[in-house]
Length: 110
Image (cartoon, rainbow, N blue to C red; front, side, top):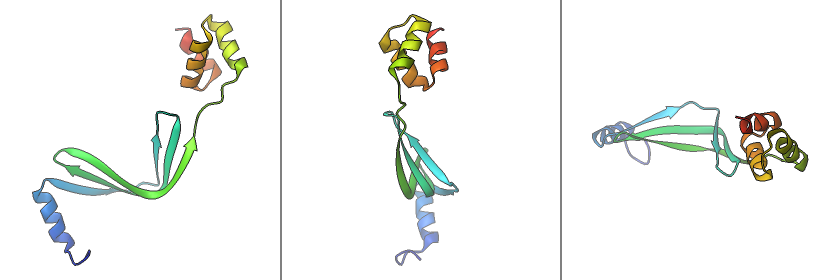
């Protein structure tokens, strides 16, 4: 019993409201952010809640923040510029997008 509430009654009320929940076995949850950082949740407890056709996830666990911003050297930018005849800004953007010198050259050579 949770706080004096019967779990079966809670499930019945949730079902009447069009809600369902499911525990999802997970060992790690990774959220990749637009600023190239990651939030990693180790040993998570993940619950998927469906309410009127909309899925929502509840995640609880140990949080680790990672900065994944690639290190871009001036030499790499120069190399991409020389091989592709593109500007420094275009070369840097391709390197940031791909994180790899060869892939950046291929990306700009399309």
